[in-house]
Image (cartoon, rainbow, N blue to C red):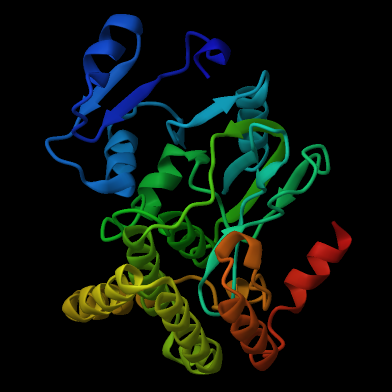
Amino acid sequence: MLSQADDDVEVLVVDNQSADGTVSWLKHAYPSVRVLCLPENRGYGQAANAGIRGSVSEWVMVSNADTRFQPGALRRLLDAARRYPNALLTPKLVLPDGRINALGNVMHLGGITSCWHYGDAGDRFQGIIPVPLLSGAVILARRDTWLTLGGFDPRIFLYMEDAELSLRARLLGFDLYAVADAVVVHDYHLHLTPQKFQWLEQHRRWTLLKLYSALTLWRLWPALFLTELLTWGFAITKGPGYLKARFNADGWLISHLPELWRAHRKFQRQKRLNDEVVLTWLTQELPWGQLTTSRFVVELGGLLCRLTGLGIGAKMADLKERL
């Protein structure tokens, strides 16, 4: 990215208490780069928030360390941002082999998120495309937009922070786009550990219970209940480590219920749009290749998807058909 940045571009690296000499190396190798050192590892979202607050630029882009911008990507993102100033934007993320990593993300009825169009040909999409969710690997928006949103939810340490931000932004009236002509290589690997599974589960439910109204949660209860069965089935088939992680996710959520209730009530008062603007982007399908190789979970998941045909994924299906 530095090779594409002109003199007006501010580059700020937030260090989450690394212990590998990164800070010293950065200051020596790239003296023009500002480094913000946090006193402890606060997770991805809080580190990004610190960078957003510390920035003085009109436009702020949050980017993972394992991304590599292709020529012209930064300029195309900025051009699109100026064209859609009331939006948050993500580029087309591609794998090192050229296939698509994510054209934004997509969410299942039960809150499980995955990469949208994962594995498709890298040259399949062009232009500026509305997307269900943003990918947290790279997000660009006006600094004022970031501050209005309050950045990422500080309660989400890692994983799902982009989904929560996307849903919250849409419900507050902001648009979400992918700039397909802005290509960024993402060193992404499908890998699920017990700790990652725990974070995904606790943050999935935190996000839905915080952002959705009571009526929406009632409408979705079959999908939510059956997704609980699916995640428990996954944990059981994966063994003790994953089962413990699933219990830990429940324990975390229960211990944070008072805070969750306050966050839910606060956001319901702030919400500008009805939950329908989110529900119409949900999908009834789960991309099993991104989630598990367990035959049991795949078969159970297929049954759940058939049972949760609530008819609110129609817009998502129509959009995918057009694309």
